[in-house]
Length: 236
Image (cartoon, rainbow, N blue to C red; front, side):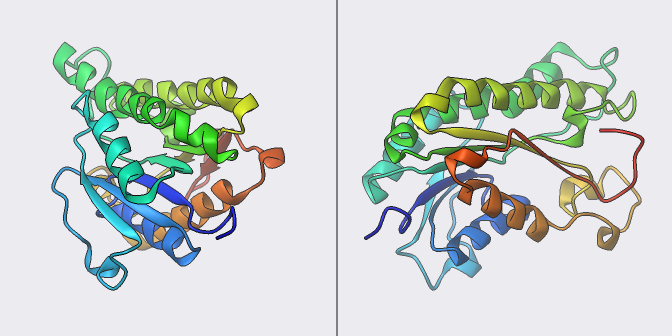
């Protein structure tokens, strides 16, 4: 089997929405996928390829979950070539009104968990020679759109910074990191935040196509940030 065949990607939040779309895109490109889920269940779309899909219990709030997942993926596939930290939460509160507990939860799930997952897989990513880390950021990590989105934006600004920090930490080992920063995506999360119709939002499948492209680029074509929007804005 050649170097580029049989690559393995870990995808948190891989059971639905953007994570599921990314998993399906990578399967179509020849990857194997390990899906981190709070309640592991083989998705219907993967039922005909159980040899290439693994489901693993993963709770982003559990400090030990990343290490257990890394061990399960290595035991099953023997390699890890990409980590796609897609799991995230939104707390629509201003930075003045949010409680300490809610702010800590935002940072725990959106920032600390992706860092732990990348760190747990670091040795395997380096062994790949072209390890990839994709952090699902947001355009809220590039600008603060409103006061109510402010606390979420603080966490996503940190995600973008984390992507750059990982890029520096792993560059000499062939590890490349990118923050993918979409605006509204047609998911359950976005449906609760805007009246914009789903058809007028970026589709999960389009995010997936972008991720598949980004992790397939050679080491010499590193992309640090990838912004995607469904609407015109002044800047981002």
